[in-house]
Image (cartoon, rainbow, N blue to C red):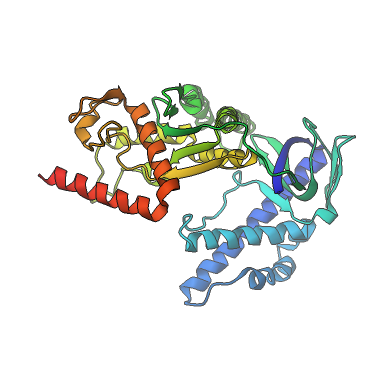
Length: 404
């Protein structure tokens, strides 16, 4: 079994290397934005989409243009990969997996990739890495890199630079040590509730740091823009944002490790987080309702990191020999696991579930997790098509009851 894995480390560049890192990241961002502007102008003129090969042919021309000769100083393959990233973003948009590509701003998306392993040298014994046009650069070696090196991605965040070394190696087909299955209901009051009744409390890394972040942002707003004091205040804000992200990521890694090691089959809700966290502000002609409350709910949803939780759980269950299944989330917290009765009245409050038909009582999140697990077993037994047909019948029954 082939396993691709990334090992991430903090870089320890010299002053000159830091300046070059910023220049190379800026060059890749410039090429990405220039290609995106060209694609938009091409589409407005009614022309066909420009593929990667045709777009990459423009790179030598851009390097020779007046005022852009500084592009020659950046690694050529890193600039080419920036165009590949744009092409991939368009393909995701065409396949309805992502929104339309947007321009990158300075300060966000400070990353670039070296895709050719032949140009990269890794010296783990001396904690250093050789990258084209950067030379040997040191890194904090916290664990051993396993496998054959495939590519290297350099990224900057919170005033620090990191390197992600992707490798590929042959591993034995994993066999799960656990034999149980579990259903998971994701929420805000409880981050993850399991079908056996246990749960994981939420971390709320943004919520707990929100007041401190707002104080730092106010200080930054009161400074003269681009002054030395403004840059110092901005660095504090960036550092706090990075701390929020790192804390959340650490929490998710620990949670997904525990779940993937203790259960062979995991069922989760197929939540559309992007749709759930859309703004309710509306327009000037048609303003939204309960905008402040919806804004707070959106922040709480995004603070949980449900998408990253599912991504980590997906590959970790595979690495441990298990399986992850996503099931339709409709009416999981309104369906009685005892008699199967579906009604909004069953959910008496955020936490209380009491079936109006048979009197079954339990925590609403636990009920949701039990139903997620039950639907997952139906998915395995009957297949996706049979489950979707059953779901359509349930939705039809609920709509008929609500219209009576």
